Image 1: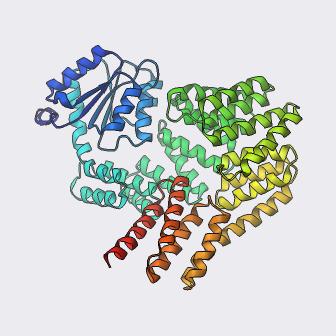
Image 2: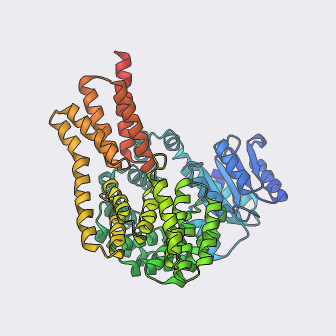
Image 3: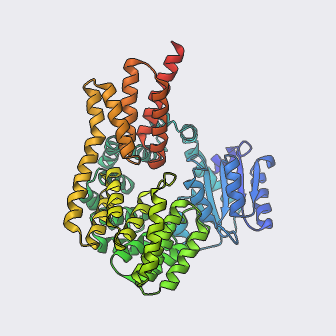
Length: 547
């Protein structure tokens, strides 16, 4: 059956990218593809990971044949993870990893990023034909869906999924899994729950149970998520994504010991994950297990050298760990490397804040206070828009150096911008606890949270009562008070749309709405409300132009 399908396959209209650091191997792969019927003009070749990423940025390929070991720089796994992370490839692209590497670490690590096939050298024409024959039909099922996703038309992608599901029984499982994940990605949690439940009613499918756990987690049901995830990892020992979500659930519930145990189990299965090692380091640091934290952070830094998933958090965690182990000079060297590696303003601020904490911990109070003053001035500047992580680091330093008023103001602003983020609220309470201000901290955090929730919802309630001008004014003030509160930003746009639907288009309001939408999209990329509100605005504008 497969052999017959291979004979009928048409390679001539497909675009191929061959990635290998040896020219002889690239030429051999090109010849194999030409023997299979590929058009020589449709075969591109890259000698390293950097070239591969550049080519993937320029055009879409139907098939990528990528060696695992690519010499200095990115390896094949890192090319694949960057291509997926930056959405340079979609579900219609077939990615085949080719390597002589047979170690468990390499195979498991690459499998985490889900290549369509993993082939060992030496590769033959017959092997490639056979494996591609198994992949073609599946990829064809996603071609139109992939095109819709490139346009960010999620509604169309879901429609195409349903249309394909109605007639394509062979790929039904993959299509259903993709549809469920897409519903999760755009925030349609109720629909996703129904789809996952329907799958599980037919068969106990691990990915569907994981998906149901994700829905529970995103709805704040950590206990329900934990039970499902414990079942998944007990029955599927190598399901790494389930381990990560179980650890995340334990962390959200405050059970750091269990989170560490789960992450360690996952790290033994696949030790080369940049983000998992960073998370393991953070959990170990919170537990005071400094040797474990240092090992995990150092591994994350090393693995991330050529990875798009490289994160300043690993450097910051390593610096904090070194300081806690009474090695301030090493901690400062780590921060110096961080500042050279990441040039973003928010990273520089975090590094400076942690530097101040290190000086304070090691008795250099004068230098810590000097850095705290410098940071306070920079944070108050209009041009600096700090994220939550930066604000927290600066607030910790200000609190430890005695600038309680500034620290309190920063922390309460974080509460107002993130009143539903349980993890962040717990961190804020910890900062107050460390300053022996537990009771005051709990009181003002809760008061700020309630104030934020009131402001978030009041404008929508005014709009429902028909008080549209008052609603717009209220939400405008709420946005000024909480510029990083995603729900405020979307609620402001909702109120503006409601007003203009009843009273006509206003150019100033259109501009305010679009600015708010872009801010929300930067803070929460992929939120379904962005597409919904953008569509509503576009319709108002087009209807106005047509009238």
